[in-house]
Length: 205
Image 1 (cartoon, helix red, strand yellow):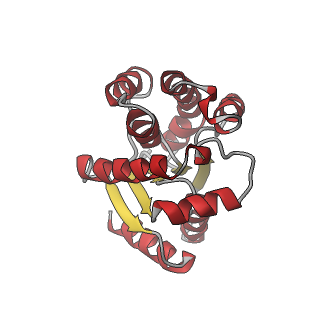
Image 2 (cartoon, helix red, strand yellow):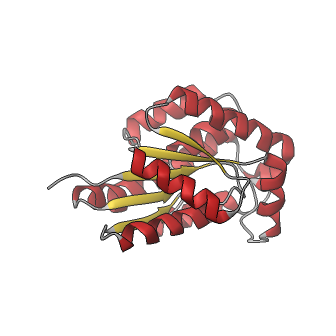
Image 3 (cartoon, helix red, strand yellow):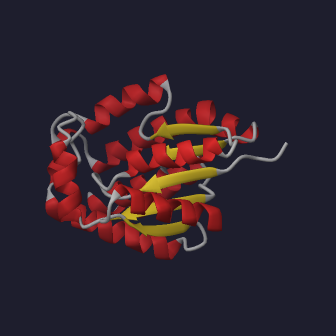
């Protein structure tokens, strides 16, 4: 059986990833593709419990080093129980975030810990997406949108604008580091236009 395709969405909080995950999944399903939608941190019962620890509460609740450990633990469970089995079954997996978020948020945004992130990733995960779509939006606009959701999962939004500017810089650097799998999608325009660009990138990859 042919291995399935693993597609991830990345970008700063409030850039519209969750909406685009759903739109792309609907489009691919309409074409007859079996699609698994998932997210990080999360995707399994255990990983969702870890998510609750990471995305809520005070900004300084965890050190960057502790965050790396928590994200890696959640990701390992996610890969074991959802992502790898679906890919082996020939399905398409679309995830709202994966390891690139840890590379940027903890490896650049919060501290200079990229080497630590990569070491844990290689040891515990050792896989990359086939295609990563980075939704690029003005950090100030994205932050306003993220805070306006009032979801209760705003721990990282509360780090403020300068933090989100560092994140954007980190994601752009990542797109240059991994040009064969990363595609930057301008996301300041309307949802329909962003969805068109996303599908164009998916079909062209």
